[in-house]
Image 1 (cartoon, helix red, strand yellow):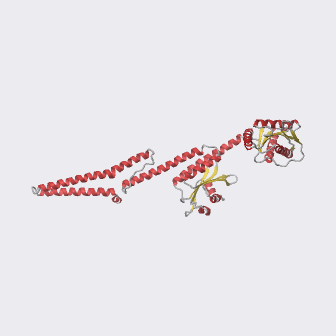
Image 2 (cartoon, helix red, strand yellow):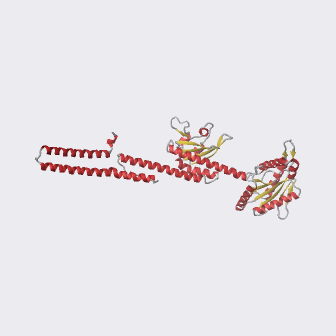
Image 3 (tube, one colour):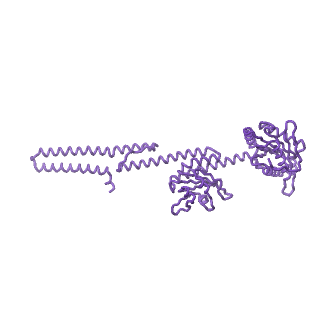
Length: 466
């Protein structure tokens, strides 16, 4: 009998009851008039007229009540429903009554709010997709994921951990919005939640609800974290890692929030994969396939950057051009396969002998170029000698245990002592290399406009200083 509790229903029942009572009175008067024909007809007519007026008044009141209680609210509901259908999710029905129409209005308002919230999230997700996929830089993409992931997931903290399949471990953690204590507490023990998420390829929630497989850590509780959701960053091609969302306001994530976070995680996965693919493509385009060293394209780019930095900071910059002596003889006598072994062996020696800030590249054939930031002429010549003697000591061992002796010649030039532009410094280094070859090879020459300083055949190997 819930329908009897409605205010609207009670009003109509009262009007109907009054109308029926009037009709019964009018019927009674009519019967009385029939039974007493000719007696007091004027009184009966007066009563009937009064009852008819009362009935008309009740009918008018019923129409007004119907208009005020049903027609106008229904029109308002219809107008708002049409506006919502057209996308105006901010429209609401202003009705606070407790009857059926009031409940219909409140339900419509809740539905409009839910549609509006979902539309806002989808719009935000679309904006995130445009931003996240607009860059091919991994650092930029991770920054955008951190920035937009927080409000989109309704979380207070977010973290990404990448998975190393070869080492079977998580590394390179990135966080945002987390207290320092919580960020430091992010551990990835074997068979923990992160590995479980990777293995299942589905999300898991961590909280302190009864029966939770992964309850919160003491540090998380101390930092006010009430729930954590962990999702895989994985596709059909590759497992990248996991992404966490942390929240402090409640101990669970709603279904629609989880759906949105899952979509966001898939977007993040594809964006990170594209960045990795781009980095690999760029690396291949800038890497010599045989030696694994940067190629001439990377060399020229890095050399211009370093020269600009040296000019800005007023520092020195050294350039070494190194050429393998009699390399053609290796190919003619032992074949090109042995020549390739020589180049790969030298590349390993060069990587070992340079600093982290230095660049060594294969600039063509048997020629290699070294870029040494913050190095003057004397230091560069010292470094060239150290590299030259390291090559002589290393040699090349072939598959049949035969050892080949290898020597190199090095030309050295510096900014600003030798020249003040990339092209000019390279020209000076090339001239110094030519001088080293002309002087008998297996030596290093520092370029000088007046008289090249020639160093060679040094018995003691210089210490590694530059």
